[in-house]
Length: 129
Figure 1: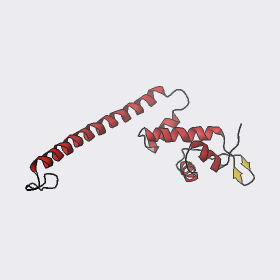
Figure 2 (figure 1 turned 180 degrees about the horizontal axis):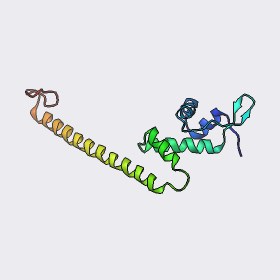
Figure 3 (figure 1 turned 90 degrees about the vertical axis):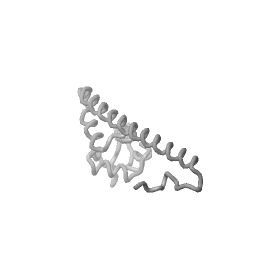
């Protein structure tokens, strides 16, 4: 089992040392108990957990939601994990609908702006009363 310093575990997980410390503060990552001299000793499991946290964040989970997912990591939390993932997917779907609506509106404004020419007020910035 490879032993690592905080810098080495951070590098192995693809994050900075401050991220590891932040995860300790947020109770997402336990402090290793063993010490080698003045340094705490990390294992590969710590790097795996950090990578999981980052991957969950990339999927849009908040740190609180990540903490909830980590609590389910005993192998019995499939139903709860699915419920959390389903709720996140519904949130993503709502955001996509909002983004698509914004895209349609901006596209229409750009098209209208191109049609009206410089002699008319620009529909993008024209204040309607």
